[in-house]
Length: 384
Ligand code: SF4
Image (tube, rainbow, N blue to C red):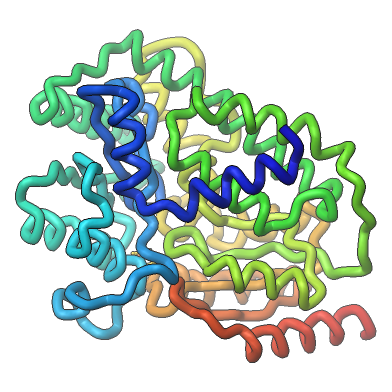
């Protein structure tokens, strides 16, 4: 498959409602189950090891009008929480058998309970991720949480997660993440070969299939991109930060690039490429996954990490990717991103790294003001 054909395939997959993706897979796998995870991270490996289809629950984007969910939340709540609930009310997740949430913020915590209350027939599980990653007990604690999730699958669906199956799933997801890391490396080296919209579509399509159905085209993409005929333009290299949960509309990503940026690093769909290196290959697989979460996870505003200043991971990303600046893009009302912005701003200023703040909402559809802001920022940097 050519690069363009792969990207078009991904665009088509991403345009489908989540429930339709689940139904299509279940029609091809009679008796199969699909479980969707709310951002940022959940162990897709455990869902996969139970033989189910792991999916990303990422709200309704621009495609869903809120008709019921607004009444279940305060007005100052991020869009992804409301539209994820709305998907349920509008039958757009019919076919998805279960949902996993975690303690990334108060909104996600409430969303799990609201989902359970409004859709009592659905499997809803809440993962208590560790708050103290420096405690000697943290790996054992998280290992227990992951086993509890596996037990819940067994109890509700009759699907066991054996150690052997989980070890195999870890291996498969290691391969998937290695290919995604290869795409990210390639974009750092030659951002003109793969736009951020294209990379995002590939990544998002990978969250809508079992990894074994993704590895083929992902491998083709990695292999074909270096030979893609393109010409590098005079643009500013930026890191896009803050969009780790609610995802920006494609239009915003397009405008960022059209306004003169090459996005060379980002935290889009971070949970699906959470580990910075392969999860270890030997030992208890639940313990290995837990240890990877504690010791080799990407920095994130939703992960409680006491060992480094909040800005350290971002500054490292800037240095590693050879970026000139940061575009900080928090979703409107996203408390973890907005709280961290204060600390990140301090760190960036100390390191002499310029930045611009561009707030967004998933359902945003007009970008002219944002385009002007980005163009002005780019010009101020390029012609300084
Ligand atoms: S967008 Fe931010 S506030 Fe909303 S659920 Fe996600 S992390 Fe929480």
